[in-house]
Structure formats: structure tokens, C-alpha cells
Length: 104
Image (cartoon, rainbow, N blue to C red; front, top):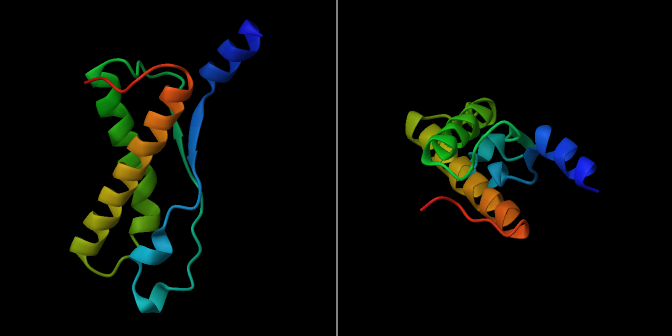
């Protein structure tokens, strides 16, 4: 079991399925469906602030393409903020399931 856990941790990826991009889009893009975003975390030290900063950078990068569909810069920035907040929430739940917490 330990081997499986270490193998999983080495390739760990958070999948942010069902990101509410449809809610963030304009009426012209309302038919767009949400695609899962994947953020690789297996190589991050999530107990450190530096690891958390890198996670945030990766979350922003993962959100760039779907958020580019927004018509204005402000809408794109709001979309990226929503990606960051949702990814932090998913990360916090993932860590809690392992008895860990985000760095304070």
C-alpha cells in the first residue's frame, strides 16, 4: 500500500472538474462546457509557502486557456481568480483527506 501511495503522490494531479466557466462566460459563450483542469502537484512541497506559490502559478497557467474566452480583460481576470479560489479549495480538501492542511 505504501508503494502505491508513493507512486500516486509522485504523479499526483488535481483535476478541477466542472469548473463553473459557463457561469463566468457571456451569453455568446454560454454554450461552452467546462473542461477539467489538471494541476500537477506531485513535485511540490505543499507544506511550504513557496510550494503554495508555485501551485497558485500553475493554477493560473491552467486557467489561461479557458479564461481567454472572456471578452474583456476584467472578465478574464475574474475568471482566473475563480480558478485560483476553486483550485485552492480543491487542494485544501485533498490535503485534509490526508490529514494535512495548507500552510498558514
